[in-house]
Image (spheres, rainbow, N blue to C red):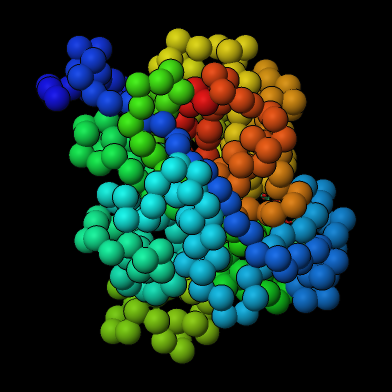
Length: 354
Ligand code: ACO
């Protein structure tokens, strides 16, 4: 394998074709998702959060979401998806070279959830396992990191997990209704492998702008709260809960996701006509609709399942990919574009030939 120096231009990293000749391509060899059985409808939230089914549906398109049974840790929810993705890829847990998890609701404050999943999968080898924190954009960040490890030949089997138990982060009282009604719990997992086939990850582009930090965050536990990172005073002030300026988040999402889709198209010399399906982070139906309109794209090409699950943060894209596949919305050889926007701000896109 030859890895030469690369040229870096905007947008994203451009690697010269000479280098690519000697690099592996990465493919998604296995994919699966898991959502909790417990369905929480908008009606279930009406008394709890002083809201209405009509307000939630009109503002977000959400009809229901899933919540874990009280006390179920994130890793337990993610585990069935991990096992199924590994099986689909035709490997055993011990074949994994790395596990990378994207989440904002890990089982513990530290270590990350990846070593916990390594243990629960029964992996007996000492592999690489770590978490990343990129909120709603995490799954595409994972694809970017994982595909780099495959392209350089460092690893052959990588488990990527996007999983969030948002129900344990929410203020489920009327004070938290503006954010609390939007989220749900869910997990998605993929296994990346090298491939010579035309089915591969064509590109990933990831971006951030820290000016967005104050627009969407949960501050505690955090080192800015001296000396305990979290205590009764920090909790009394609500610093452990997600806080957002919903309108600002909305306005930025509908600019950045179309922009990221366009970067993916340009990078691969594609037009929207070449694309079978756009799978965007499921945050709000109106964000999907506005983004499609800005792209001059019909909603037929924009996958939607937010009405069933709400915003499952790192898990929306792999869940949507699984459901779209089951529904026959794309098949081998088709090109799909993924895009996401979330806290940070972070945003991203990926182009995949399935
Ligand atoms: N039920 C009933 N009323 C509510 C609720 C609720 N759940 N939440 C807020 N309201 C009220 C407010 O109190 C306000 O009342 P007032 O006018 O009497 O003061 C009124 O509804 C309007 O509130 P706004 O916040 O201005 O409502 P808006 O139309 O902006 O919609 C929403 C809010 C749905 C949050 C929207 O801004 C949005 O979707 N933003 C994107 C946020 C997002 O998706 N964040 C997720 C993470 S980031 C990502 O994934 C992209």
